Length: 581
Image 1: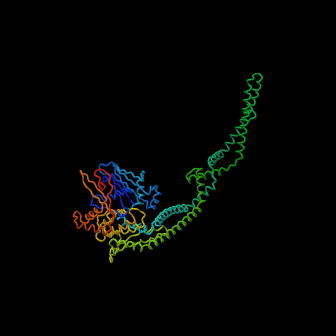
Image 2: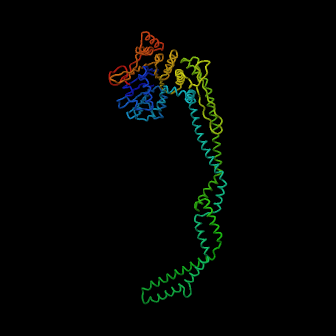
Image 3: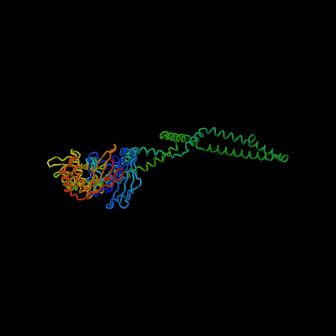
């Protein structure tokens, strides 16, 4: 439960500290006294958006602190552990600060934490119900959440929602793969033809340059042979050839060795040159012989070069690029059939999962419909308890769209609550209820039912008495008191019939001193409760009669507990109440 709440420097609050009871805690006060500030402060503590406008003028910082006692709720202590939050001695401390620049800070057990963690923790601990929650209840999606949570089907439904999202994503991917495969399949003949043409061509990276060189040599074969012959004759002519001349020169130099030893190197150089001339002659002879013996199929070379040119122009790349393309096409051709088989297998597996989803969806719908009657009976009993003795609430399920069930998974149908306030009247969707009082009571009936299954420790209600009074108000008070026996309840109310059922009663008031308005919140003693309930009955015209009526209301509500003053911290006179805005 929320055992302690401190509000410092926010709006009209200077300093407030409140100690709550485990049961039904009611807060009353005149309109504008600051009751909604309590609700808003709890919202801040639970991670709702902070705003610098919350800060009390002149304050450097505003804050809200709350202490939750969880010793009696080991389930909640366990649920907090995955969040990295450990209740110390069964106690959890939350804090939220607001600064003038609009920034806020959050703390869990004294450690700085993101506000999102406060929100997650708050969702586990507190269920906050104001007018905004009334509007949420009008949404069919929210109504489906209520029912499925009550029926224990929320986990199953959310698992189905996750599976449906995964199936839709998988179906989209398979469709894209099928379209791509079919495009490639349509081009398969062309791909196979191109690959076969490149395969047969047996291309080599440097063959184009080699072929061009061979073609040039064959085109000038005669001139080359004549040149080789002329060169050999010039080197090896019997009388005027270079070789004979070099031989003569070498002999002449050798004859000078005896006369001048320095001529020896010249003779050696002449003999070396003579050897190189011999080698050159041999190479010329071999090239001439090779060219003479080389086939003269110039047409074959021209045909090969034409093929290379055509392939290059067709595929807009060079010979190395053609080789790369050939390898790529080879992979595609090899993968055509396996890719098709794998895609078909994946589609069949998807269809199997789709059928399994449809069966689970049918099972969910059956489980829902099996629980409709029990839910309607339970809500009906609670509606009777809040003044709708002959009202009825029905659960309607939307039809499942099976038109595309063979292609895409059907959407999980939402639910809608239909309300009939009196016999003979038509049932209308809850969102079409015109009366705010009716809606408040229907919401309370549903929430009282949910409280038996909710895990949260604290239920907070704001203006749950809107538009109701008389016997209905008394029934709402009884229902809230019953809720307080299972969960701690905080309720802001204007209705004396509800206030009388509180196990602890707080009065919210405001006063102006030295030009500044400050709200005061204090726990009421028994005699003070009587006076406050009388004020709720008669306004400022409290008389002995209205006080007697108030006493009778409190007695009828079974009031036996004496209230205690609220602790006060802050500046000014210390009184039996909390000062604030």
